[in-house]
Image 1: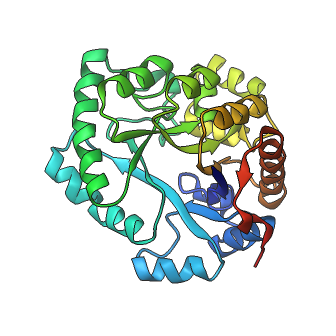
Image 2: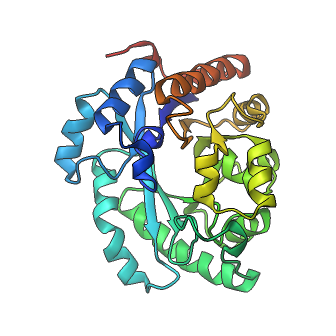
Length: 305
């Protein structure tokens, strides 16, 4: 049972708020991440598009591709159309030995609209979620046959945000639909952070350690703000800097024999939260927690560039 620690470059290169991180480059993000000790990075939009170009680019920083976001449109697309839409990414991730594709439905989400409050996010009833889950299962089976597992990302502003949404999706979908377990989105969405991990541990394929600042997200809810407004306000941070009990989370990962990637994802305003400093804080915190819980880190973590 081995753990690898990765990071999303979103603190240096925010895809949804590019002006926020305009002073930072992807080269800087990967260089600093590897210097800190991270072994992988999730895919960013400003990485090379071609598979071999991306392979060469990542190799230059001695860093692996540890997953990446996929904007799904399965609610509005038929299955074959959706396959065609995501095929290039599926083939690329399989070729680069990524652990999974982080898939989320984006056809009706409000997460990228700074003017739409989270209270206006789509909410489907159980029957509609069940129908979607069955369709998602077919897509996930196809991806698995292509050599790339699907890990579904419950996300603020989307129709899979709260505890009911997550439970309904998991209950109605086949095991091919794995779960991306994201602590920060669970906490912000009002779900049970520890209970979700215990309940769906057999479906958890990928883990995001994302912390939240409770006072900020409470204020965002009170003022009915958007997801992007919450990002700018500092709702998210790295593990160990917010209010989530990552010691308890890590102990459960040990109890359920989790093996795979723990990825730090904490989009913030770099003017308030210098990316290198916060990325190092998150990495060091995870290393300590894994040692305390008895989780074994990949030995490559001790070998920098």
